[in-house]
Length: 247
Image (cartoon, rainbow, N blue to C red; front, side, top):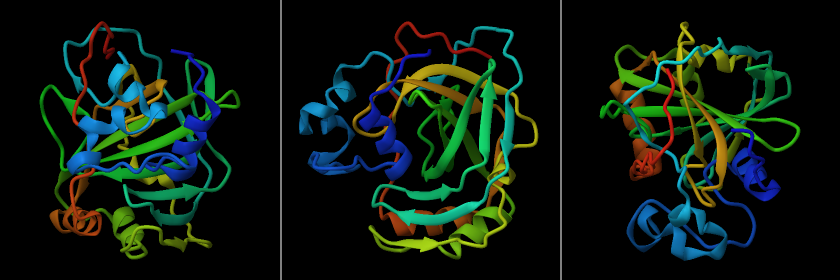
């Protein structure tokens, strides 16, 4: 899994979330720039159609494994919330880390998709959060958290108060005391697989950690996100091929 991503791909996801930075073709989630066309929009996006380890996937056919506990230490706070036209992204300050198998990654940002991109045994969820981490070599690790409809989520509520309603806008969250860890389930049991970015350029070699347990969000909070996005922002599931999905 320790395949190093190209610097542009890693920086793209870290800095722009679901947007590919700098002089590349426009892409989206609908029509002739939608997911089924990504691989043909720009030579830089070729992995979107040629890759064999693409994300998201339908997690099933699990292989029992001795997965070591992850260590999450998010001693950081949000600094800004951005509407990049493809997602709502929250950039964070320094100080957040994820350690897995003795390998440490720094938290860079987290963003949202509705409905969920990954499925778990065929089940879709109304919303999914991706916590994006990078190590010093440019390797990426993503923690995915699934949301189910229930009570109002206080962290989401605070973020949505500042959610920019137009693409290209951002709002400072300086002074926020929100801890991103509050969006993770209390039980950190997880599934693991090797995958890719779920947006162009679809680079592979990403460590995917999908939380087994869900977090609640209200129907109104999901609808507010959907209204700002104007359309679903989930890439369809991709073939698993020969990859093991560990649990």
